[in-house]
Length: 289
Image 1: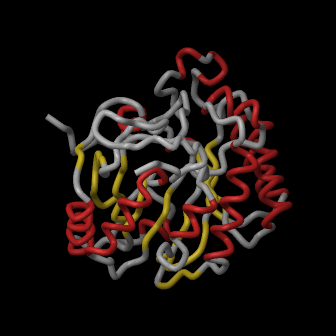
Image 2 (image 1 turned 90 degrees about the vertical axis):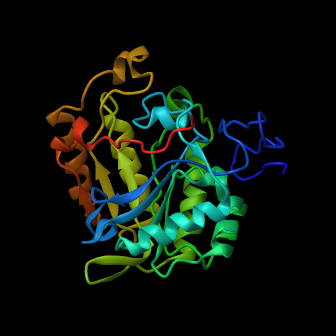
């Protein structure tokens, strides 16, 4: 397979020992498949989100909280059929949805898995926002809820911290397509059945980036899409090499971003600063031996 699944467009024939920018082969590699209760309230619901954490990533965020699975060699390689069996197991446990976490470089494998078994609960696409339009169009009518990040308003910052100099244009186009597919936010019994939620993680020292992200959201999509403002940042990955982000977010910084959220009258969710706690960091279940 000549890979063109993400905007990197590596055109690498991914297979055993042949990896693209994402650092993984063609078969799905996962680190965890379990109920997750720490997502936004309408994503977790009462039963928990049925999250599948995929390994590898098409970004290179130096502060990645999941650095062990995005960059290092943690995880287990499975087949698309085995992936479909994970959906069945999570559904049987009462999952409100099946949530694909960091899935952009496994689109074809995920689509193949859904040919083996199509869950009866909503499918959630939880991505960095760095998705290609061609890939997203393959998901039209399949994904019920999109949960993209919108990390940056400044491509220079995106290049420095995520090795992604075209992030802003690519992510805004991707979110446009997600909203085209799922324009209405449908919540039933406290659980999101359809729609888009845009996530933004506030970084220390970069309040301007965050307020400008919110301004872009207001200008482009107004209040049609709820925003999830995240305060869970903790130095991780290679953050110690970047002094500006090698610390926790301050109350003053987060308050400035919250004030902008309220000023713009954007709907959505806002984490408490107490969410920046190691007890919320995901533990990985699957390891190759």
